[in-house]
Length: 243
Length: 112
Image 1 (tube, chains in turn red, green):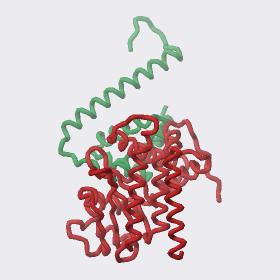
Image 2 (cartoon, each protein chain N blue to C red):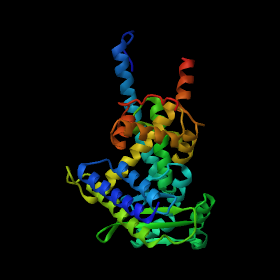
Image 3 (cartoon, each protein chain N blue to C red):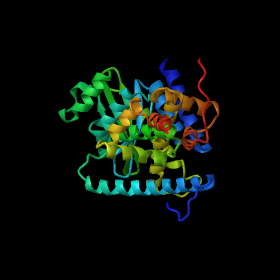
Image 4 (cartoon, rainbow over the protein chains, first blue to last red):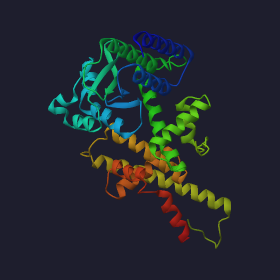
């Protein structure tokens, strides 16, 4: 992709997000699209959005892959690593070489390197002086992220913040704390729905997410709506036909 | 339940009695777990990672037993308590397929 093509792609992506924010959307769908866009257009391999709950624990809301290899790396980074550091300081934390990360991040470093990641950037999701979570970009090569990419990444992080907080303000008056909890609750429902599908369809938890996502997409419904119906057992997904 | 006269419960009565027993059982279990949770203050708090696993296990159990998510979580909690393990450990077994409550249910039905 040439620089010019990429700029056009970025512009298109932001226009798409702006459209979505105006039209109404499912927060997990929006964030899923956002992390996928980050991985497509920025020089990164994988990405994920973490959101803080009431107690300040960071929970993974969306990631480019649901496979435990990525989920665990980001969650360790959220426990003791660059993600929690970015969250508490409200600053971008970049680790261009994960191998050189401080010893207090031992568990994160070992896991990340073991899974083939060489560098990570944690970008705060900022709301005025408050930080509500982080956008995390992982790469399988060493080196600083180009400055343009970092600027775009901060803009993506801002879209995520707006997306999380704006979702309900359209029709309900909720406090910020309630809005964050609503977003986190949709993740709980999705995890439960993954369990239901894994059990009934005899597939792995990772594959279950794909099944749910594909169904939501092909029926033009929000992934949270579909997950809700699966957990309530009002929706029984047909077994997937062989492709 | 006792009766002064010899009698059998009809279908509707059996159903009512069973759902009453269910309800009471659930409350007793909830209260017992709550009480034991107060005792076990030094237990490690759940990390977000284990939470994700517990939610996935909850989904599997609710499908296995055809119950609500809330009850499924209670089943996991009860099982963890009864076997002296953490919810995380029990959830791991459920998600890996080593522990399946519907298998227990089927076995119980075979005995009847």
